[in-house]
Image (cartoon, rainbow, N blue to C red; front, side, top):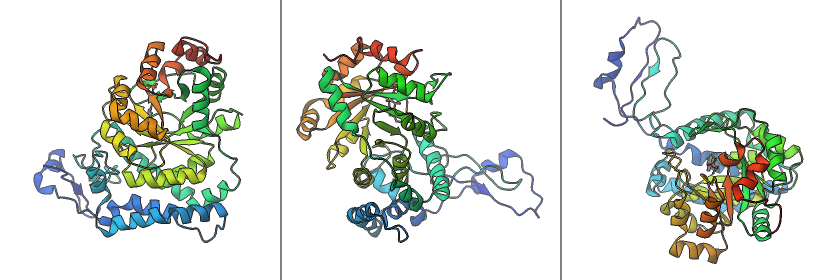
Length: 400
Ligand SMILES: O=P(O)(O)OC[C@@H](O)[C@@H](O)c1c[nH]c2ccccc12
């Protein structure tokens, strides 16, 4: 039976002690009632993120509001036609659900309230687990720092650096793909990559080794990263533009990344419906951030290629649902008409994940990438700077 929610609630007055087998009785399973507003909570939050803030009269904010009006209207339209967020996503081939359809598994809050893990409230894969956790994390963060506060902080934020420009420049200068070097302590698939992890030291070593840009993991629970790492790297005087490597599902996170020192953010097509990608890329533009659109298969690539204004596409060789890594994925997605459209549009493609040797770099370059995103193979080296020359088979500071 699908999505059978077993939720028992009893008042403490009732003395109730049941053997676990009782919880599996089919008679206790009910189908959840889908609340349209609940199902659309993310959309509502996203729209709110774009509304003018009466107390905050900054020019930036009003520009954001005006330019996003059209997108907000589209979102409202989505409601009007009565489509649920999950249905819109599913129609675009997105399998990741934004939150558990039957509500999160409850922790024991007393002897009488609990919920059994079942197909409805158990994530189907690691990416879904990350997204569900992120959803809860963001609502807590938003309570502590509402958007109005972030917008205030934006007034004093230093200008962003040109992420895409830095990649192009490195590619022209060296004749090799521009390197986005990732500051990554751990991942769910590989565990801890480096015990003695000093993010600033690693970032400086990458910069000295010729990285064009850096990627900083900010997810705490699954990647052992943090926004303080991002801030510390920015404040340490690193010149390379910084990508905030986060699982973005809400516009609030883009503002947050910007005030924490990001120059670019990651948007994952496996998680975000087209409409979200459209308005999030607009918000990025208005905040001076580059958006790296990550795709993993042909369908995601085609969706992203159908969206105007995309400058940077990352092809992830790792399937975030299964962790399988296959670098021929980059070649597959750049073959034929797709590759031609990409060069016509002047889009820079980044080859992501699973790159370890000069041969790997040559392979994805041959496939058409102008940049690569590399974590594990260089972060694991005692001296990450040497890790970079090892990866490319030469010192990339020297022009070709
Ligand atoms: O460590 P690797 O295999 O070199 O991979 C780096 C980067 O591509 C990977 O960390 C990554 C790509 N897309 C992501 C999305 C979220 C978290 C992490 C990632």
